[in-house]
Amino acid sequence: MSKGEKNYSDYVKHLSNLMSGMLFLAGFTFTVVTIILTRLPDSSAVQSQLILLFFAAFFYLLMFLASHFAVEVIYYCECIPHLSRRTKITNTLVALVILLVGYALPLLFLLWDLTLLATISGLIWSFFPIAIFLFIYMPFQKWRRNIH
Image 1: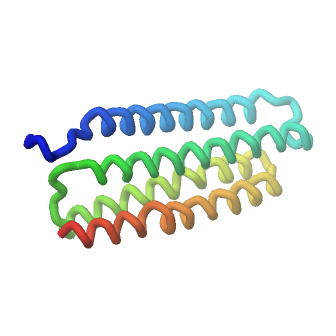
Image 2: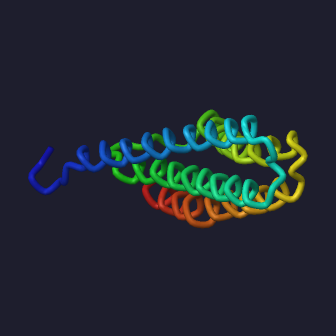
Image 3: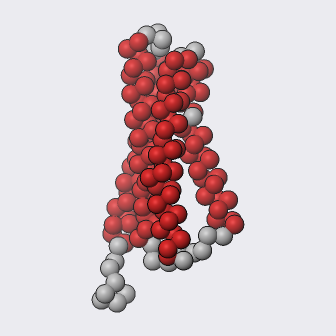
């Protein structure tokens, strides 16, 4: 590395650690929701549903931040390959998995006949993929077009 180039490896490690932490907390939050649903004597009580809604919103925020850090790391990579058909398919499948993971909570709520909570959390999650598209994916695509 020449003197004029900056070494971002420590920052990339930091972002990777943040992303891992966010995904760990998201998995933990998902587990907490599942345990709460299975252990509560009356999960249809308003107080229970508000707590579950809080955990759902927290889960969605963690997923958004993990997506952000996953893309942010790429900005500091030295050599990025051209976007091939195979890479596009992989990126599409990753985005689909993230989208479907977010809809797992509303489906769990529907299993316990919490229709209002499922609807609200589903609507909240619907805003997150839009935010990911607008604030993470589109700027990344613009940046990627400029480097190649």
